[in-house]
Image (cartoon, rainbow, N blue to C red; front, side):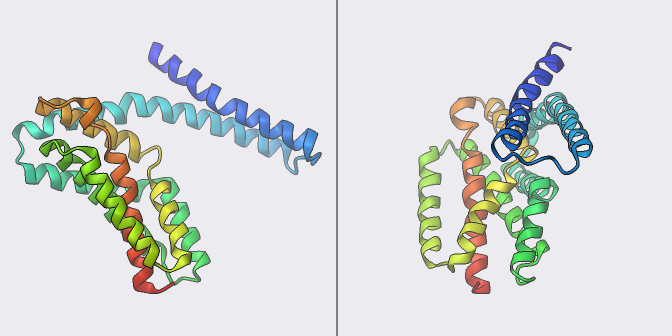
Length: 231
């Protein structure tokens, strides 16, 4: 109960100041009345309740589940199975990420259907799956973060130089949009669990860095997609 209370307070203190700021700014600076005040207030209340429930569910369910899988997976599984599982997890959580659904739909609309929503989502999901797989491989082989992230950033910079200008912003936003409230907790918990289970690894040093790869890899694939489609 104490953890639930703490998570609830954290959610409220994170959301309510923003809501109050927006309401005050709209009233005293913009001097614009709310078009549907009852609907707006109801929506804010529902959003706060939803965030509180989501945060508590995350702490009680997804985080322990991800860490438990990470702890048990390396014990009796070969390396290839760990990597395949990591890829499927990364791909799956991306397809379930609410922010990714919205972003892919907007990309399809603004490109007049040239980049369709399923193509964008699949490309980003492949990138996240690749990023999680490389991150887990980094933990298993104890590869320093810089030895993976810096070369990946070099490839990203080269592709950004060659890619059509319109796709660059889309590529960076697509990777950032998918590393949201579903992907990040599961991937981080998985990485910490694997680093802890393997022994000889520092969960703080080796368990983190996966999210950085999850940002770089889908950006690279989206830039390649832009080059292919010549946007």
